[in-house]
Length: 296
Image 1: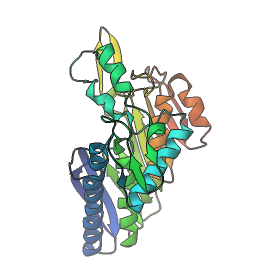
Image 2: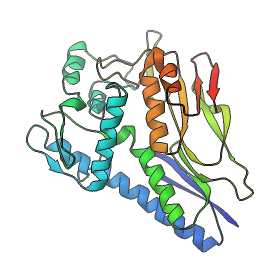
Image 3: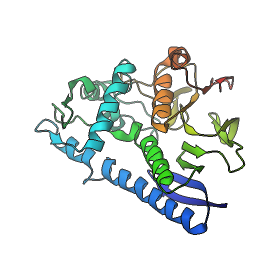
């Protein structure tokens, strides 16, 4: 079989397809289609694009709603389920907190500004009837950044399968969907980033298929007076969660589910691993001191 790797940039980070096929033409055709699908999803849902469906909904906050297509409706329904099952911690309206948290500044947000921002958060306030989405207050926003990349990884994998690819993987900025093992049936060896030395691996897991995603306090953070403040923000308080975990990696049939599980477990703080155990999914959890617990 022919093996090829395709590196590209999308969704704010480095991406790669590692695919096997019967011919070079077959693998190239599949890769081109998969990369186009990732680009389509980014164009459609990026909050950085004025013409995305997310930006359209946000611009009309406090005024009117937007009728959405079936794909967007399915993602909004997923966001609603994640919100309910996480007791409100996974909230796609909490992205507005980026307006007061600048992790490159080395400064904490002003309490007044943070309190005002928190008033714009609350998925339960969004008017969503399955076909039309409306934000009731000007300044409210939705943001698919918490699961868009994972969804794109799953869709890219689907496209590869439709083109006859049975062996390979999709990686979008660390979020992975494994289509199937190597042609000799050996699993892929995936290194998990060390949360305190991100250029090194702290563990390696073997995966033959499924979605793998990680969440941790190392992606964006700052130190203020010796205290570590990460980008994992509690939507109820607006403050970073206090956790005994520095990183969680989860394996699930879909990267979308794996990513949500990893994120919620971090947002759960001190009860994160206990919550994760209720999911019965394989995982690796790392403490700030580098201690590893795994069910893989």
